[in-house]
Image (cartoon, rainbow, N blue to C red; front, side):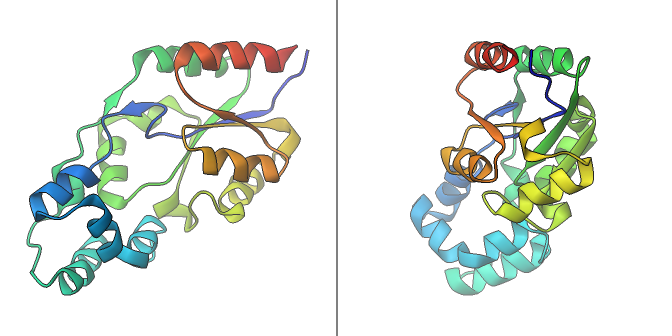
Length: 193
């Protein structure tokens, strides 16, 4: 039986559903999601990596958009729901190994989940806006491994985004492309054999 030292869970799309605010923001701004992403440009990555504050993001976005966005829209439309079935999976894993969160996020979403107590599910949280790196960069994973004192071969990473799974695998981390709790439980059982 193989013992893993650490499990790293993504938040949005794994632990949380109904977390994607971009369609609602685009609708309010009366633009397509693609246009929102184009106008946000590299500023969104800077926001996600904690390099700029949310107010600075919206100032820069407003310049590109041509109209001042007066409301903080990331927080306005963030209404995530936690998957209780997955919470049970995580709580069981915590009895045998260290379980942490590795998430790409922005400050309003991080604070919302922190205030709601969602991050208490984990032994530690590594959020892109706090650590300065985001998935799929190698630095994101290396930061977590270094802070946890874990080797890639001792680590299991669970994420719903294939690009992030591939990036983790490239570093020697066992990575699971998440689809649902039942499939995850089956895959975790296979890894223990």
